Image (cartoon, rainbow, N blue to C red; front, top):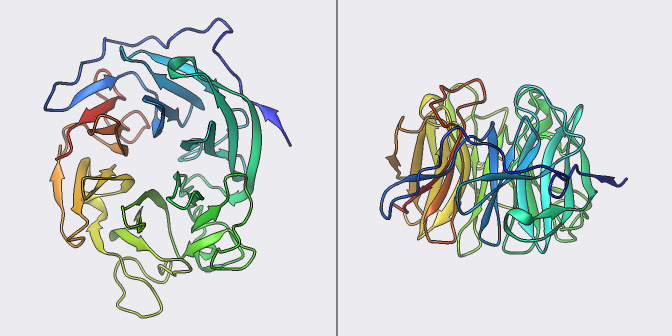
Length: 342
């Protein structure tokens, strides 16, 4: 079933007004590339232009060189409560991919992407996958392309933990699909999108140079996790939260108290894995050479952090997430930050 996004370019819309001018990033330290975002969730790069999804408005915002935000599209069909809405986005081969809540389900769609910079436009929607369980909480939502050219999608248990161990459910999983929405022939479970299972709410996916996949996952009340993902692996939820030391389940590389973490987007740069933390309000760095260790930056400085990606200039782009009702917004929030690789 094809439908169209609402495209704003060329229909009288202009750049979204900003409350104050953006702060040019200094050569060394952090700075704001854009401000005035409304519950931003994901960053994707189209050429050198950052695109940002907004969970509640369902808008795709393009960040101009001067910090102005231009709404290049509003994704049709988005309807979510609580943590639902427009979530992860990815760009590849002149398509924009989006994961979003559509009432009783989460869907993955793609849209032809034309134009450059803030002049980008989206074409007709193509539904790739539907029927992913949705809920007011635990919708997962991160999507990313692996080095194998496949699209990976992190789904949550949608508040029903039984989904996670059920290989017949798309909830509580990491899914793997072809760019046009088919099941890859070499997936670990024949005829199934499921790549790994036993997850509660994965919101971060990133690959190291050797092809290893890492995922950040929300625990319940005790432990949040950093996992290395193996095809067909069972990560234990809801039987296990954190390390189980049980051969039936794959233990996390590292775990943190939920008050210090709530890990969301992750990125890999210069041999390190960077994790944006919501409740913990910090950027955490984990060396790939010592995945049981970590250091922390910007603790409580910018509030809740939702996503992080490696930027074209060798720095990191980081999204704050203080306007979602759980944070304490400062003037200018939410913002897209540029920070050095530390």
